[in-house]
Length: 269
Length: 303
Image 1 (tube, rainbow over the protein chains, first blue to last red):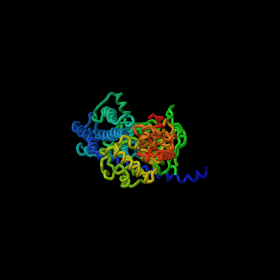
Image 2: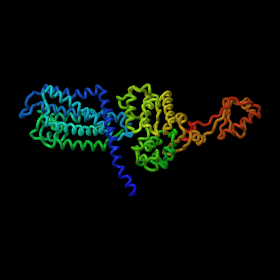
Image 3: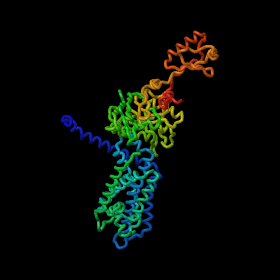
Image 4: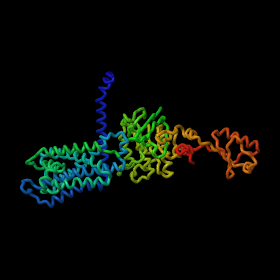
């Protein structure tokens, strides 16, 4: 017993490190494969980008420029980051959830499980690819925001912007994973995703910064991750008078809930 | 080398016992067929061997590993073709195989994989445009991507036209030539006769019989059938067949069913010579086919 323990002790760490390195390498290559497949279906890629960008232009051209009523905040400094949040939700929640539901329905996940590819590497790869897509949408939204509406992120707000994006992808990505497990079929995943986030997005004022809801509903919406993400990203554009950590906690809590549910219910077939 | 060793394997789903203590072994480098009617427990057995299902009892060794304890390590060395599973919608043949190769530490070269399954000409084809038979061969290529020692094939040719089956069989025979061990489940008897080195018949959660195809056929106790054109005197009833043999005549054909072919043939030829019948016309010896044996074993010979 003692001899075995002595013999095994020095071996464990390099072996573990090898495993971790291999998992990371596999996750990266899986992310590249997923990206290639995403860009190859041009139609799919186009509309994933088109939706938030079209909304950005539409809202930007109808919402009057200038200060929001009763504040010293310009409208574009709120709706541009709101649309960034919307892009994160579309890419990480709706698309990822629907994509995984389709892969499961087609039996691709089942097939992947027959290989030695660790589940962690596969799912990290898929999430990594989602993060790349999200980043690309965010970049487009930001550039159009600057060029068309003069909404320039503040330099000191980069931390909020970057942190919000990472947390947003993790949170909505894990919720997307959970969603794919809830949907009974590939076809139902998209409608479930849309029905679950659109009402919340409207009530969170994503499409209209002046949208107001009754107090009790505002409390409920405040506990959901959509407004939390939008507000964190808004701080990247304009310093909030009442910056609070609540939004951060809300996002973290939903990330934990999404990950826990996905780990508990994730199915390969 | 023994590739798979199963002894006393039991499996229950709740109260329902689907495997009732089965034993068999698969030797390295052979094609072993697990045959049985639907619901006999074939898929359950395979899933236990692959490490996807926890057994209720008994011991299982696959490539000297316990699949329940080391599924990840085992998966490096086995290839699996499931009964049904799909491909990513956007993939092309060579790309998909390369993706699979990246999952293994020692993959087999792409060109070789394409050649083994005869898909070299379709390497740039979109997966969704492949025919059913081509998809099945792509299945096989993916299962071989990690250069496995042991390959599981769960009903590889179900629902195929004869040409597709033939090509799939050719691919499986290529595997044997490469020295791979193959465990195949099927309910096609011709497939077993064509491919199997050894086989087992699984029914109602038990192995009814196991061994070489010929051994199984013999084990079922189906007699060999010797037939010849009945000579005129035999047809007319003026000559009796040898008393020690069970010979019947119908439509001008004499049929002798026997368990000991050589003795029966000697008796028949001696009888023919004695009675100046010359050579027995159209003399043929039909050893029992696997199908005869299978039906005898599985349905109790209601044929």
